[in-house]
Image (cartoon, rainbow, N blue to C red; front, side):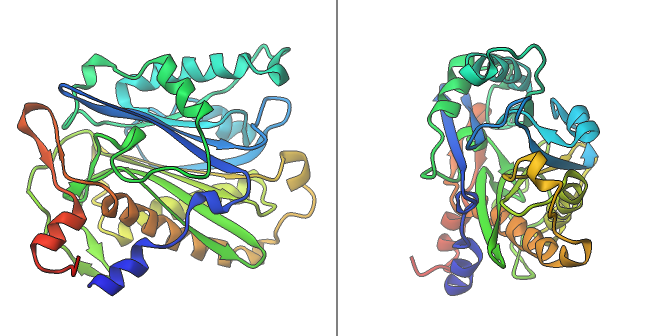
Length: 321
């Protein structure tokens, strides 16, 4: 299994899309295991210079702040921030403040922040709302192409498919273009690797499940096409074992780094979208596996434990190292 897992987990990164950076702020203290993650396209999108963006809601049991304007207008006006459920609203305010402080937003009087969340209350005391505006700003300011995976940032307290969840990433080349995915995983189901079931580390089935898949590409795609690509991000969850349960918020956001004005001319033709669909399915599934592979066993509040996939497989004698 070792060689096959290397293939499944060493699959590139969202940073392979030129101009896409990621920043984290990880908060671990007492009963808190939480944080914030920022996906920051560069140049940073603004209301005057937005990026084309589409989204897909597989199950809407979640708080995707800013989603209705993205669906209506097909544009991304800010970086994308990920955090825990009860910190999402404060994170949105902090993102607005960070944007308004920018010189290129000096005349902005309306702004649509895009903030998504997963519920980390099984491992973290979510009621503390531990993520502060300073944490959000730090994640945005520290965004780079060198970022950690697993139990970090927004993924610190997450659990998925019977193991420790968190932040994962993968990418694919589509001709001369690149498509990358970052996943925040916190959903139920039974993990399948290469089509084979993997027995969970424990049988706890916490409430408040969700997954956020963020797809970035430098291909010239419009908002409608990006919405079609986002669908494949949610579909990919099923290929690795998602249960799509009642309490799961299953979301995908897809954006292009080609500015909206540019993407309307010279878009990829509809009949040429199939390679992008395949790339999204593959990279999204592998980003989810990546989130589990890189997450270490985490002890949280109330004695709860989420076991790392790699450690579990090693204990079962399925890994050489």
